[in-house]
Image (cartoon, rainbow, N blue to C red; front, side, top):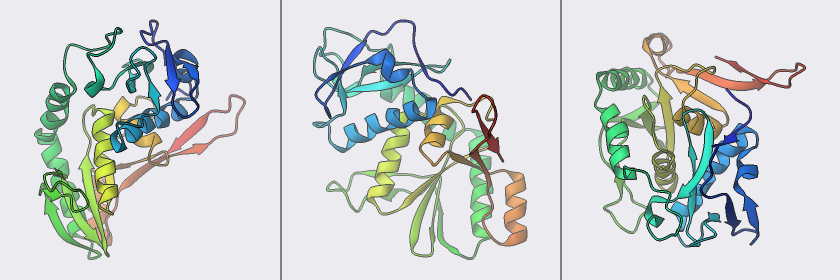
Length: 260
């Protein structure tokens, strides 16, 4: 996993305004930092905008509208207007598809795959083996009790209660947009619940953007569910998951290592 983020060769939005300080920042300098810091700030941009659209963090200097940080396949980054803010700026940063269209194609499509359904059953069986869990439900609507509008809801892959704590489990197999990850996290946080993202596998040498968004914002660890973890869960009568986490490794290059 690369330790340094890089900007794309062309930055349409090369300068931004930081509303925390009121000053201008150079987009390339903001991006060209340690990858983990950039990924956390990428998430923070979404979190602050979703919490209050009138109080974003970074804005476009041409139209004063909120921006987001896009991660490309080659781990390069660039800034673009938030989807709701597009179309009202002299600098047009829109893509060919809308956010909703891309989310529907990648996120919802992946949830209907056989692989996703299989992992969901493995997870449910693992939780069912643990007597500390109760209220196990699969793909049941979770309506927001803490929101003014009762129409706010989510449908996690699996949900249950551990002691007195509600937990939602989401299985991640394909690329998921950062705003999907952030919005789900904010929803369950407002509900006083916890959200766990689970993967089928993890290779620290070949990570995807969605894995990095979750990894860097989850104390640099990811959880895996598979046939082996189900076997362990059944034998121990406790939910067992494989965990990959980052640990410092002292060497001449000051790199970091992974343990599984």
